[in-house]
Image 1 (cartoon, rainbow, N blue to C red):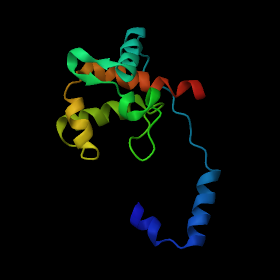
Image 2 (spheres, one colour):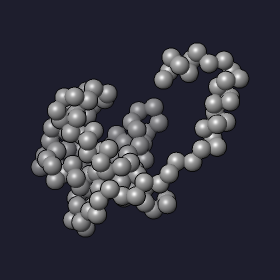
Image 3 (tube, helix red, strand yellow):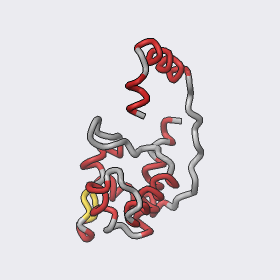
Length: 130
């Protein structure tokens, strides 16, 4: 996207920015009904981590409750659980290459239950704003 954006003159960038500002993203309903246990486990992993698995808290890089760290780590709060789980599985499989140096070693320590818990909890953080 960067090469396309750089090729636009100032007026076209302003027109495009105005167009995007008028758009509203549809709210996507949660993809599943997580159990209270999943949400509790996801919250723990996001806020504290799991020493037994040598997992640091997601918040250490992605900010409090996945709010993101500008220019450093993307926000995770409110993202689709399906999207998040798929991204984690792609890193585990070695087929996702963006951020692989940071995320690759982390995701190898996550099992399927942790992936489901993290994804469900982070998705649930977006529900409060809708």
